[in-house]
Length: 228
Image 1 (cartoon, rainbow, N blue to C red):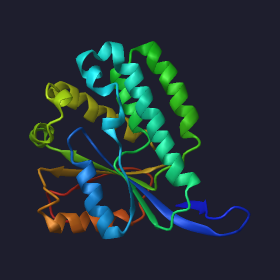
Image 2 (image 1 turned 90 degrees about the horizontal axis):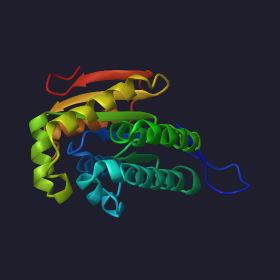
Image 3 (image 1 turned 30 degrees about the vertical axis):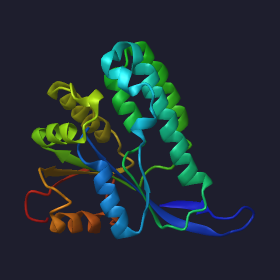
Image 4 (image 1 turned 90 degrees about the vertical axis):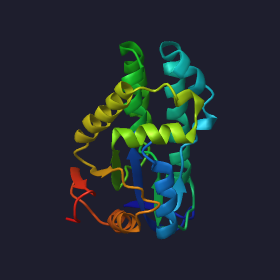
């Protein structure tokens, strides 16, 4: 839970849940946050990829543009989270984001060379201490075929040449990072090829899970099997 002071010099507070929906590239995070936010009457936060001027050229020359692309994402994520989690007087009881704070370090680990990563990690650690931790991170684990089709269907030109090896590295980096978060709750959901737009039963199941409390550490749930 986050206690946010609503008015300066008063004792008014709002109790808020901060929840993150995460997943690999093409997992459908943004669509899912939109669906869930409507059900929960939540404030939704979306990462704005189109605002990063380095992203298209990064995919053409990763070695040259990896550091500026990751630095831009880091600063924009921090600015947005600070605005909504600390500086804002929100009346919504739930904030639902389509990324978690650790996303910056997860991708930087895969894209930066060692010296750049050490510098980036120091900056990330400094900024992270000023942002509240999510109550729960839900990771939507998808089949590789789903990811490929999703990437193709949304038509971002700079993503078209992304190969399976890179998607696998990103997936492993998420898993490795989440296993270290002993003081946070992470729910790793095997969603396979489930389409939450069409499968209302699965959407309702996930929606009901969001406001629950969980033990710290990572837990695995298989949505392709019967509810546990």
